[in-house]
Length: 164
Picture 1: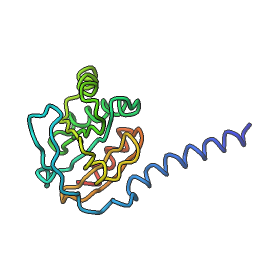
Picture 2 (picture 1 turned 90 degrees about the horizontal axis):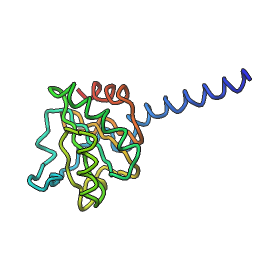
Picture 3 (picture 1 turned 90 degrees about the vertical axis):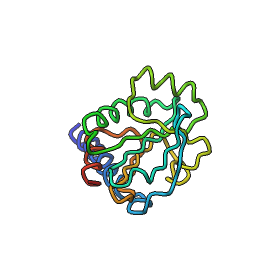
């Protein structure tokens, strides 16, 4: 029994440490942010990511069918509200279901800006292969951290602090 508890504890510790290590060791970490312009989800604006230079930016790649994405959004919304003077949080929809996306955002009450990656340019540029993927960009426009899967508020805050 004690051995089993020890093995489970070691495995959980490995997963936690691995997630933290991988967040800062993704192949793109340290590289300049790609030049991208994306339409707003409402269709009434075009946002150039370079306009955020000088601020810490958190990009959340998501889709309405993604359960972990749905659970990640309130965490990001809370960070966006609490740290609004220090960071910009931007959702990036990577799914063609815009009506479903709008309905989900309204039901959850997400307040941070949402962009539409219709052509998949942002997902390709940031090598998004699973959802949710959260990218933290530092003030100089370099990719500072890359999280995949559901990420805790503490992990995100740690990445944001490191990017300041």
